Image (cartoon, rainbow, N blue to C red; front, side, top):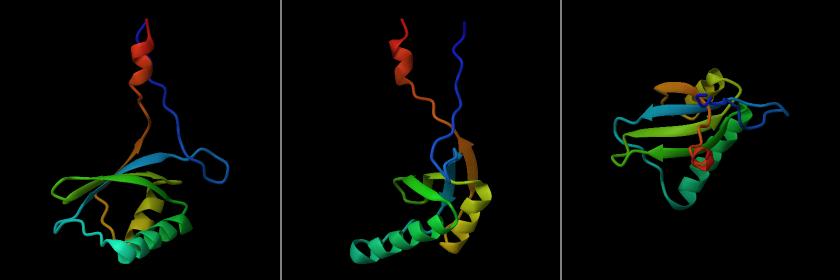
Length: 110
């Protein structure tokens, strides 16, 4: 019997499961994030702005040339991410709802 992928939602929003999204962003001149207190202030502002819209930024992966980022968010929907990104003056190229496929349990199957 072929293995079946189980799709599940992660996160919590008002006690209910929340969709998880991959957000692809392009920064034509490169992503610039200040260090020190300025970086702390900037990131704190992004987190607060996101939270006001029910969006949780989990992490980002940035290309080595810093022209693209691939970020993971929990949010009630794509529009909440778009609104938060607009308020944070951040680009959004694409938003894809995702689920987890963990390869490690499969190696345990006899």
